Structures are given as structure tokens and as C-alpha cells.
Length: 82
Image (cartoon, one colour):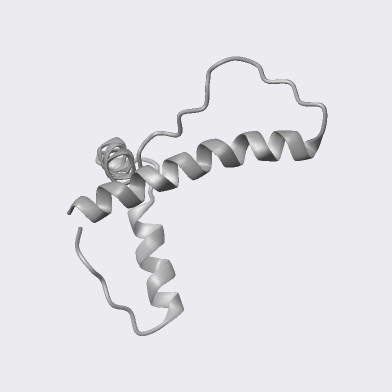
């Protein structure tokens, strides 16, 4: 992905507007490229499928943190291997 330098915010915003045209034929290609990048950089969050009911917000937060912590541990382990 190329790096672009700008002297002003207006210059940056104009560049961004030109790149985000709805009729851009490469729009779907660029979106797909971003998705592939995100999938390469972050492993999936492995929360069990289904509906989860919680008695309190604290219980729900603990549930989420358990899986987020596992994901962070996997990312760290992968990066330490490199």
C-alpha cells in the first residue's frame, strides 16, 4: 500500500474524497483487500456460537474478557514466534 504525504488537512481530505467515489470500479477490490489484511493481522475471536444470557453486566463483561484475553494471548504467541 503506497504512502501519501500531505501539507494540509484540506489536501488530505480532497485526496480521500477522490478515492471514495461510489462509482469507483476498484471499490470492491479495495474493500476486499482491506478485509484480507484484517484477517491476516488478527486471529478470529472464538466466542461459542448461540445466544448467551447473563444475570448481570459484570457476568457478561467477564464472559467477553475471557475470550478477548485468549485472543490477545494467541496474537502475542504468534508474534513471539516471528
